[in-house]
Image (tube, rainbow, N blue to C red; front, side, top):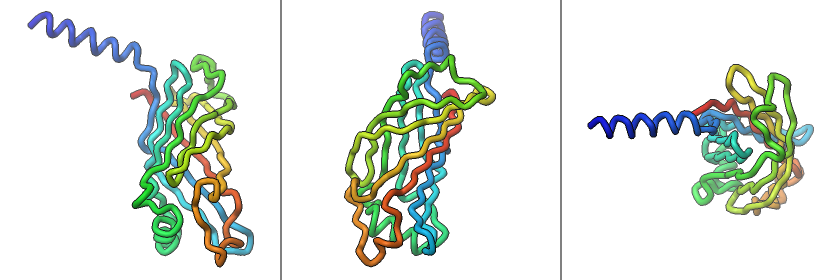
Length: 181
């Protein structure tokens, strides 16, 4: 019995000491593809999961497509059924790495890093590179980033009837507050 308690205690302490992952399940991803003089095309998803490995800068985010909310229920329906086909492609992911990442250098002043990795949307994976901002606030890491996404690059078909009402590049912003797990 004593050995079991000692082994369990060592395992618990090892997990605490060597755990270097920061995460959230309540991150936010917002996309905006509006054109001037037309109806706003924007959706927000506040249930995004994200993990940052502080030991090496690995960065992963998972978005459930059906969780995007719009001003109009009809727009939400069109987004899920006609454009993103969320029953066929239920999630979008990003798996990448923050270049020259050093967790010890993150401070209360926003630092900008290069973020490179694979973005998967609508079943299509593309290599992307962007900037990511990191700020340390009360033991939490606040993350922000902007990615420009061309729907046609991810085989998202836009009908000719509405093509002029949707921006060629959708602005996808990510905002996360990461905590130790």
